[in-house]
Image 1: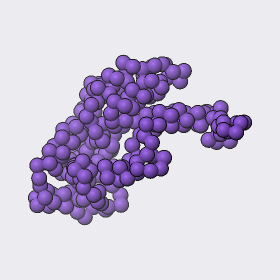
Image 2: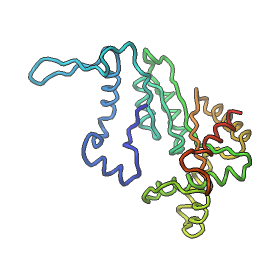
Image 3: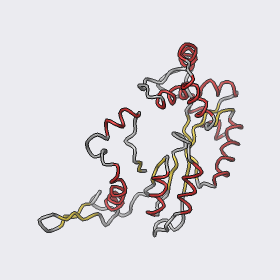
Image 4: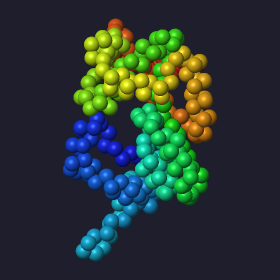
Length: 241
């Protein structure tokens, strides 16, 4: 899976792009082609400016190559994946904006490749399942708060418990935070196992995707172990029931 963003909050992302290999974002298509060559059994060839070549292989005795997917949350990666004939993942768990447009661009502009004669897609989705809808909504709060911090340019911190998130909202609530949280919540699947399972099925059918990847974003209550992610496991167990 290959994505263009270095992966952090807006401030750190900007710092990473000021210098080094992550700074030249416009060379991303070239980087993707390089990776495709390097992981193939044939490898890649480097040409010296002084003449001659050097063969580069990611592994000494490759018998196959991993399937490469492009991950994106904008039109850019959708167009690139289509032009290269690669499978495409839309980062719906992170953004959600422009989903219809991205899939339309990818499928409409797809150029068949030898490995992938047809376009192939999957979507990501944030989900919280619990025995009751009320518990599920409560367990969604910590991650919703974290998303609001990310979107409003605040420093990222350790994930809060449900009680900490509720207390913080009571004293720190502002229009911008509430707006971000409401927008994110509208794209998440939150409820009982049966409710979320039905929503997942409808979601996959609506966008006619090959696969859906679930990101279980359920938070913990005070007193629950912070090193076991029991609520996330619960989400998956309820969806699989």
